[in-house]
Amino acid sequence: MSVAPEPAKRVLRTVTPPYRSRPDAEMTTVGWMVFLGLLAVLVPLLPFVLVVWLISKVADFVSGQVGGE
Image (cartoon, rainbow, N blue to C red; front, top):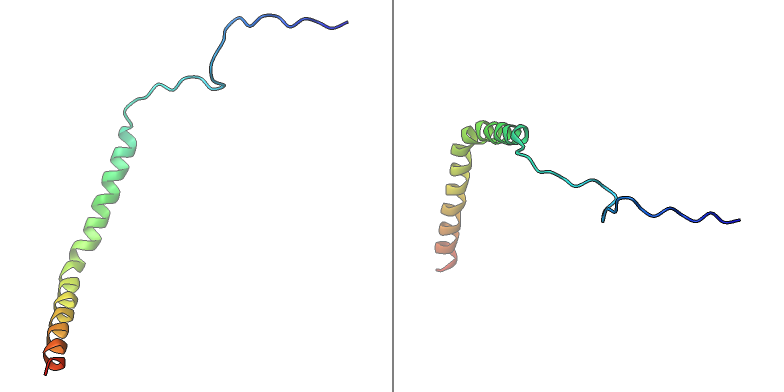
């Protein structure tokens, strides 16, 4: 009544075929484009960030001098 299974002809240790890696030049290009876009946005903002940072340092110094009296 029962049918005996046939022996396996080819045995794989995984259910998916093996992966053959390759260079991914497209994603490298996209990464560089994102980096250059962020650089183009953030570099013009750098002077404003520097001014805010300097004001905060001066304010901390002045508050330390006034509080020390």
